[in-house]
Image 1: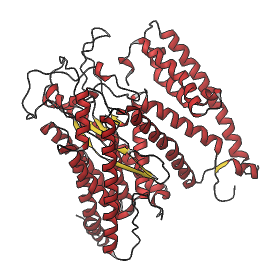
Image 2: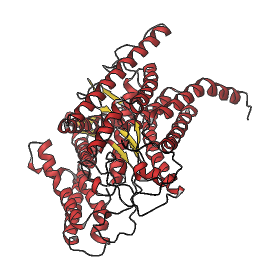
Image 3: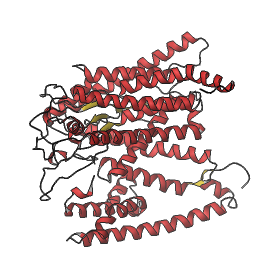
Image 4: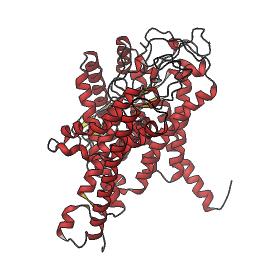
Length: 115
Length: 444
């Protein structure tokens, strides 16, 4: 799908959907948490990268303001998620051995050898 | 366990087509006279833990009304590939309109703005197919060489290959592999026919749901297994929450990109990845000799299904053309390039889109299975490289034949034949020869 070929309204709509569609997606797949939409940082990353040129590097057009807003919001959500994930991964990798049983319970793969 | 059949073709089947645009460009043919190359490959995907059937098959589109013309006759009425209108594909289609070929020929002929197909564009299209095929094979070979899981012998076999190969006599083993192949191919045939019937009776929702479920399985479950094995190989610790987030993101964005809309490169990347995953499953779970016989048999089946008048894939294509509909292209790799020529207004549909080249995912999968098996069981890199080159040569020839015959052609036979020939000759003749030369320090 090439962005150039889309008229502006469709671009906006697509950007908005990328930002929001995770909500519907999560409601299908999670069934439980309406906050599931917040769990797709990758989608937000795609949104930011894909619409970056449209939002910031192209001459202005009517829908561009809204596209910019969505891109910014996606970028914000993405940054938040990166911070959370980095923190958690650091904590986990550092303290996994010390946590003993809890650490093993949390682990998907346990490396062999002495930590 | 069930076989998965993923229809990559327009009809939700894995169909590989080379877009007419390529031909058109290449041979200055009128759009009406271009046929879609139907590269078919049918993949029966079996996963021991899958509970869904996916059938991979590619169907070629043939213009039912167009006669086969010699490719070198330039047509005066050059029509451009179908423009945007017919390219409103259904969900999951992020194909370029160039996918002109897509939609069963019933596309509205448009006055072509461009005329010639400079040869360089033709070459570009061929390269555009080489790159994804190469990438897929690289991913598969890299995994095979590094993650030992996929090379480990397992007693667990797919339900479609019930005969074991752990027998003492060679004859028995050969017999078992042939029997396995027969079972597998019949499953594939049944699935294909089932799909054609579904399509004929317009059970689109069923097909849609089937495809979505199968890609769900691929994107979530197989990638989860793959990730686990990679972490185990590199002895990394990973916790469930992080893995959950990673797989959830990967899968969700993949579903969106493949079945809905997304950036083209991302969609291409996902298609390559899921083809590689499927190929790895095949490599792991198909017994050795059965795998080779199955490869050969599938090429023959591909040939038959696409070219014979009553072949299911051909019927699929023709049905789609009669109905003037785009088939579900969610599982076709599209490497479309879009050229807009002198767009006067945004609404103008007279675009010249050379379109890209389309190849069904089944083709990717079987090519990768061949090269992956060569890497896993062959002598060393010589064999792998030889198979790789053979497949690319086969692909080139297939595209050439497409241009010559201008009708749907299967993509598997030539490449797989070359691949098999190269594999066995390299493994049994060239490799020992080179080893001997090296041992005697004799350089040629």
